[in-house]
Image 1: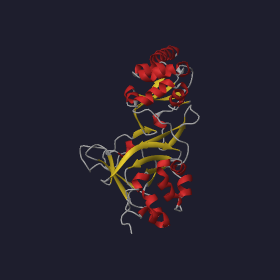
Image 2: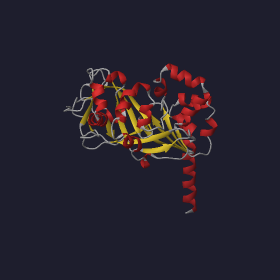
Image 3: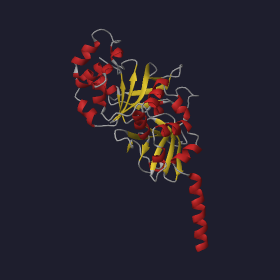
Image 4: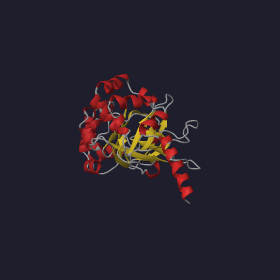
Length: 311
């Protein structure tokens, strides 16, 4: 029995040595850009220490996809770089097997959190494994075990950092969403939106409202029922990032589109346009995606969606 235990301990120690620390695992995975930035931020020794840590590690391609000015800003501002990198790290080991939908993990950046979501495609049999996202970034490879924690590889850099404010406060503080904020305040549901959730807000900016026929915006703002219908038609219960809105199988247009109910009671259909952009009900284009906020996620639209039938 002692001989068996000794062999087991030897095998375990060899396996642990092969795994190495978070830094070693990142090297093995080829995450050279991440490691370079970790070194520039002075975090290599931290991620080589006892831990434990969970690191959501962007690929080299994820960093390359950042606008060049953003990447240069990160490299020239050590504090910002450190804040962004620590927003990808959790100060405990978290296996993908324990992830829960809409779970919030507090990162080592005290001002940032990581929202985990699990998405199963509808109308597909047999049911495939869930798509896992972290602040909307798809987890492409999970549970790469290190001696001091675990690495989950993600497809995008979590930048800009998530906002702690709720949906209503974010709209209020965003100058381009001033008309939408007026509409929210004209309803009886603003407190529910602020305090509840999570929600997905499909936010039309001011220039989208300006496309409506003359007098329409004033009519909406003066009519509480109309304002409430408009606002709740742009709200979905739950946090649905872009990864969950894309068709499961793009080779069969329309068959695997995503259907989601709004708080207004209507239903929205998410599909891909011929140019590859995400559209709703075949006519409303999603312009910007995946702004993570305290109680949900915000996407911006090119137009105001009018719930049918609308008097």
